[in-house]
Each structure stands twice: as C-alpha cells, then as structure tokens.
Image 1: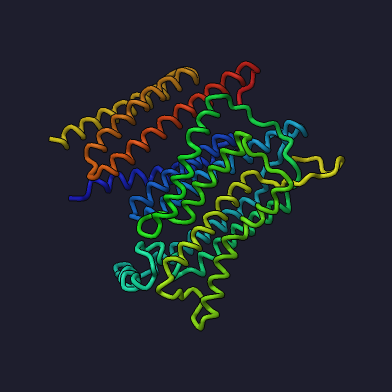
Image 2: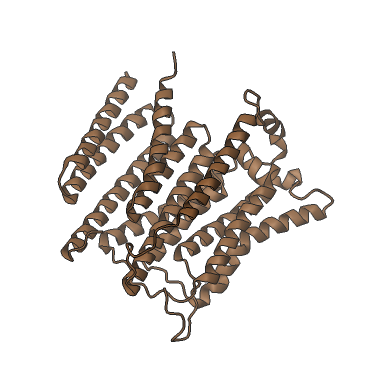
Length: 321
Length: 97
C-alpha cells in the first residue's frame, strides 16, 4: 500500500511543471509574473515535502516574495517608459529563432547535467547526514543546515553574499537619478495595512535570524523578510531615498561581506584554516556574521527593488527613469 | 474525539475554498469574482486554522497559527481591496490591462 501522500506529491510535481509551462507560454506579461509567483509558492511546498524547510523558507521569501516584487516593479517601470516613448508591446520585434534555439540548447544541457549528477549520485547511500551529525558539536550551533552554511561550507555562503553585492553594484552603475515615475496611489486601506504589518515584519525577520541557530531560518530568510520592510517603506513613500543616504547604503551593502571576510582573515591569522572558528567563540562569531549578513541582504534587496542610485543628476542629463 | 472535530472543521474549510474557486471560475466580472473569493477564503482559512489549532501540541503553536491566520486574513483583504480599487479606476478610464 502506497502512502496517500504520494498522490499529493504527484499532483504537486505535475502542478509545478504545468505552472512552469504556463508562465513561459502565456503572452500577457502581468499574467506571466503572477504565474511565476504561484510557481514559486508550489516549489516552496515541494521543498517542504522533501523535508527541506530551510530551502522552502528561502524559496518562499527570496524566490517568490522578493523576486516577484522585483518583476512587478520592472513591469511598472516598463509600462511607464512605454507610455512615454510610445513603444508598444506589439511593436517589439519577435525573438530571433537562433536565440530561441540557443536558449533551448542551454536549458537542455543544464537538464542533462542535472540528470547526470542525479543518476551518478550514490542512490541508497547515507549521504552526508552522519558526517554532519558527527561534526555538529564542533560547529557552535544546533541546526545542521546553519552549521553547514556558516561553518563547514562557509566559503560557499561568502560567495553568495558577494554575488548579491555585485548585483547591487551593477544596478547602481546602470540606473542613476532620482525617481520621477509617479508614485502608485494605493489609498488609505493600503497605508493602514502597511502601518499594521511593518512592526510585525521586523519581529518575524529578526526571529527568523535568531532561530536559525537551532531551527530552520537564518540570514537569507530573515534578510529577505526584513527587505519587505524596505519595500513597504518605499511603496508607501514613507521613505524616499536621498543622495545623502548613499554613504549609509554603501556601508550596509558591504557590511555582511566585510564582516564575513574579516572574521575569516582573523581566524586564519590565528594559525588556523579560514572559517575554522575557535570552538569557544563559534556561536558568537556565527551569530555576528549572520546578523551583519542579514542587514546587508535586507538593505541590498530593498535597494535592488528601488533599482537606481539616488543621485541628483544635472538638468538635461539622461532622460530616463 | 478531538481529531474528529478538527477533521470536520478542516473539511468544512476546504468546502469553502472549493466554493470560492467555483465562484472565481463562474462569476462574470472581476467584482463578483473578488466577492466570491474573499468571503469564501476568509471563512475557509479561519475554519482550517481552527482545525489545525485543535491538533496543535503546544500553546506556542496555537499562538503562531492565530498570528498566521490574522496576517493572512488582513493581507488578503487588503489585496482584494487593491485589486478592486485598481479595476474600478482603470475601468473608469476605459483601460483593461
């Protein structure tokens, strides 16, 4: 007798594939984004079914929430630009066949690589569970995922933080100037909603960061939830980025990477391998890194949502938004 | 006994979700659809949350379920309001996008 949950899993898997196809084939850009967001929520559910609540939280917060907000913001921006320059959706040239084929080839190669990796992996082996469980006392935290991310494989996590930093640097290089797009007027109900949930988001984001030491949660999930505070503040126009705030923002962008690298260098300077934290201070160091990385992630994601370096350009400069 | 109560609450909540989805698919315009969806889902979610809370082991879990219910209810009500507001304003300008 099979587990009744197998039926649920099959439906879930079918739903994910169907949503992926739908979001790629639908013509309306708004529908495309909405389908992508639903796709992300289903993926988060799939991660829960795979007993990976950490990944599920990250998928829900970053892959669905923040990415969805970024896509919707981009759509708003595109519509504003189109209304000014009279470029309509229909006037855009169709994608050349060569580009389509190249994309299909790349996607096929990635799928093939994943298949090879999946089929080549030891199928019935114990995996790294036993190794990680054995080494957990040396990690300074109680949650295996946090132990792996911040201690055993800290170098990978450092690179992830660097990727985010590189993204915001690129965005600030490309888009500059104070926003002159009209603020979306969303009414009093929305303002009240923002006032109500803002403090709750701060508590939940900090809780996710703190609980990461012993349960699912951590810097990326907490940072993404805290970034929602930035999104709410930007959308309600309670906070408008000013040129003189750029110094603070730059500091916040590099805070996580800087702290992470500094701790690694200091540990390495003490006659150890980088990221081989001294056991007495492991928990403190991990919490310090996670806290700083959380601030960086939150500020960086909010800055990516704003999507421009707030600098006062001289009149008659670049006339875009 | 508690399991039976919880299961019937969750089942009742699911019926409301199904009814809301039928309304979303069958009703003619956006306002009717929103009406069906928000009413049904609000009650459906409350019933499911109540059923799950009965099964929850610790007071902390019950508290968390209550908080989740509250924020999801407030967020979905606000979203529906925003959708309806946008539909009314863009409809008044004769735009459908």
